[in-house]
View 1: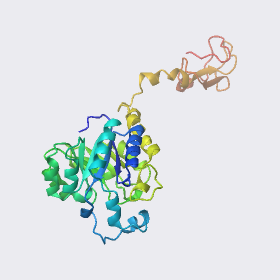
View 2: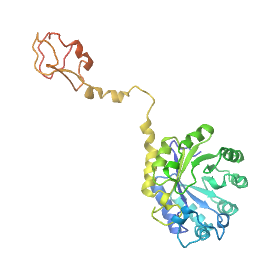
View 3: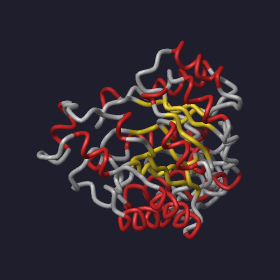
View 4: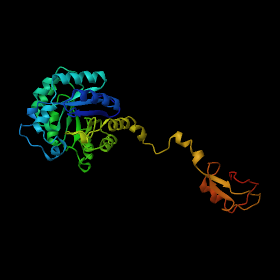
Length: 332
């Protein structure tokens, strides 16, 4: 979809801007500096996310501002037309792709006049077929997160798309414990949907899961991104900061160099080092013509010379036909 030979890295800013225009600018700039291919934001109408009296779940109760109601938090991080224009402007300024997750009519109308690389369907909306009808009108690539989703739900959503979507393995836990990351699901999705690009939306703490997913062949890596992992808020603790994101981006650029070819035979470049690291048979001491060759006057050592180490058995017990100086290689 994105025509990159290496995995496409999305810095999921989401709601980590905390409603601050200053944060928006810094996050986009730092994502670019870290090497990300795209930044992604979440656009929504708060009334479709939480009721005024909605209660926090256990994870939200630990990470959100204690005295702030859940509905108030969503209202605070809501994007408006000004902020969306600012995001578009800053993405263009920093030459980084722009992606949005949309959740409702409000968010669709909010981004309909800006240039975007793709639209994301969140795991929460994989069964919202009316939403996909509206998203299709954008005629841009569609990314689908598959957290909480059954195989049937994934297939049903794929059928509703007018383009081949990109699927992201995802576990909808915030943060996701490593023993629940289930990265092997990436392989299962690749086998089940062979004509689609399969990626990974990472909710674990740290960078290990993203790195493993890259090695497993994920074509897209989406990682939550923050200015500071210690900030109070829904996603900061499970997010990558600039240093973490740079580590992931640097790895994705270079990891294929580690894989090489499938050849068992060593490369010619490596073969050239045989003469330095392989061993041969040498005189341990001065040997006179007629002396019997033995383990006492022969030694196997570097560098490679005339005879291979296993050929010593041909020499033991034989008489030397000429004088051999100490440390000189033996020949038949």
